[in-house]
Length: 81
Image 1: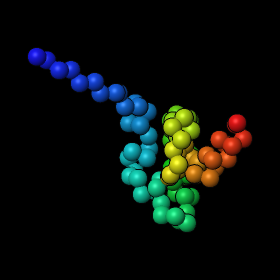
Image 2: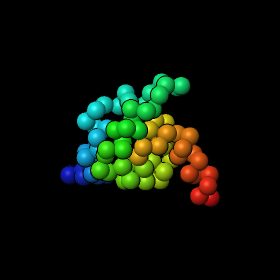
Image 3: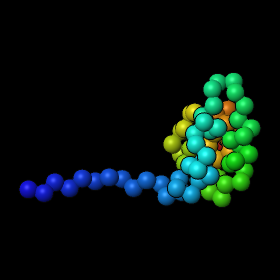
Image 4: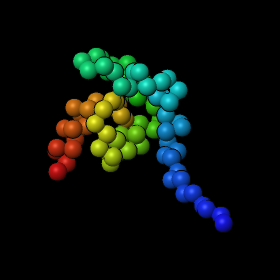
């Protein structure tokens, strides 16, 4: 008997993201730490908009996604309702 496993495909954009090449430390800093370096890297990233869209669609609550902090994404969610 053959059992087929279904694995959902991962977002292709993540492979092209600059954050994937620099590591997560910048993008998930300790509370109260600066996100300046993460935002700088995001500003250079060619898939920044896809990242931000993913974060908003999936209600990501931690870290810098698409160049925006948790507070900035929360503000977008509040104003878009």
